[in-house]
Picture: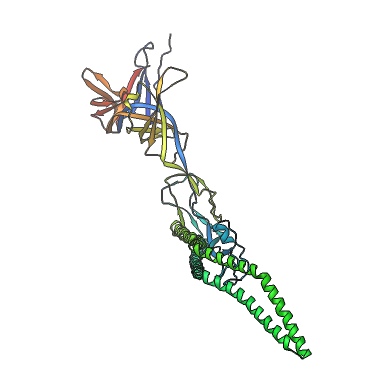
Length: 504
């Protein structure tokens, strides 16, 4: 024989975040079942139907780095000449040292030509860099804090800003000075090359005349010596004074020695004159090419110096744009997951300013079976709830539907569906569990109650309302959309307590 229940037991349970009162009754004999009454509340909200799947949240991590140039480069320019030398003008100025190996050999061997230096003259630039040190004055963020794009993350000391600005401004001034120096030096190089070009043209035009004059001078020198010797011999023949005769003989020996030397070197002197003539003609014929060689490097240094000016100005402009009022602002919206600096630290390109859980890149990828995938389309909205926030519903949309895959434990075919979370709680971390509902139908802002609280009698529907004095009242209601768990109802008020009765 079963024991007779002689007491009424009341208990309070929580179902889906709603307080439910459970009351057990025994109204007849001890062999009858106990009737259980569960209290539920009429609430206002959305009734949603769809497919629900669960998965872990993925939150992309973003880093904000300090990408400003941390160096100021000062540039200078200098002029360099090579392959040059000066020598006597005209013929008889010495050996030319000419190489006949083409234009390049000729340029390298012109040590005896008139008109100054020859070869290549160029202007080169050199640079020296100094580091910029920007020091953190105050850090305004902590890990776990939510920030918006444009919020101030950190501030920089004014002293370090002023020091860095001065270095960058000096770099601009140095670069502009180097550009002017390069332009001046290159202009001088062009003038020198033009002077040498004009000199070679002039010498080449008179080369034949000068050459013939040189040959005539050699011949006249020998003829003059011969005439002087003849005159001395005549004087010696008629001289009777021994002392005078001795002087005449001495002069004769000297002239004979000079004549012998002149006749002996005549061939070499004529050859030297001819070589000088040929060299002068060669310079004349190649004057334009030699000029082009001399100025071939002109302009390079100016271009390099101009690039340095442009770079220095761009660095200064980027610095002013980045620093502004001395604040470093956030480039992203999201939750701070890491802070790279403390007050007093120096900014470095190697250390991130901060890292964030990107509020715009939170996704959930769930597997939807082939039975339900037809109801899911790219762009569809979805309701999302998180275990960490059980009383809140957030929104998202379908961004991608992947290729099918089969489970290793069964033959079920499913499809990975990625949902972008568009509304998020204050703190969202990777790995949190999310329930994603792909909505097939939704009615918004309606009175709703558990389906189990609705009693159907023929074509009519009722709920059993519990009044404030504890009495029960049967209320007729109209039932609208139902998702199988919750139904839209009218005929009751928000906050009413209704009973779900069943046998235990």
